[in-house]
Length: 231
Image 1 (cartoon, rainbow, N blue to C red):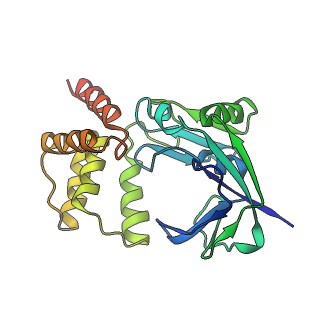
Image 2 (cartoon, one colour; image 1 turned 90 degrees about the horizontal axis):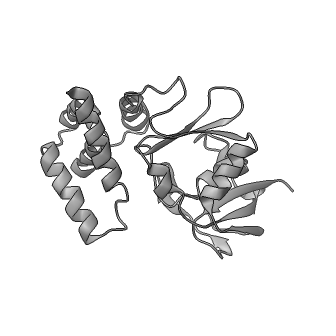
């Protein structure tokens, strides 16, 4: 029997339940233990980190915001082994496979620190890690590739319709991309407030629900760095 793996910050699971995500409502798994470990993160998305490869066979784990990994990988996690025959490939990328039905856990490996597990992958030469502002050559330092991803992956291929809050969050986390993001908002008939109003919205939201948006201080640091470059 062949195995696939699912990493989760939730431990002690006996059955994995489908949940709604970018591609649909599925249980997600991968043939790569390295990817499953990275996906066990506490929080984080395309605006805060990137996972890619330059073709050398190793994954590049790239921090998009200053000190984001400190939060992203600050949790314990479990690596679950699953029966690969229960999954199908819908070409989501990175050897990822999905199941529309519940999947029983074959084995659970418990880890007390995700950051330690990430560092071990680096030490064993299994992945490359880039802390902000460092990054591989194929990712520009101004993060302008994110605009291409929004346009060509999410809007064109996946027909995503953004909300005003989603675009506002992109602007808050990447203020140097504000002009291009506002063009996208206009194309999708979205009204987005000024940067100062956006900042107030997210700071207030964090005060009300501190677990909801983890990267407020990272975004404010990003804005300070951007402001210094413009001076």
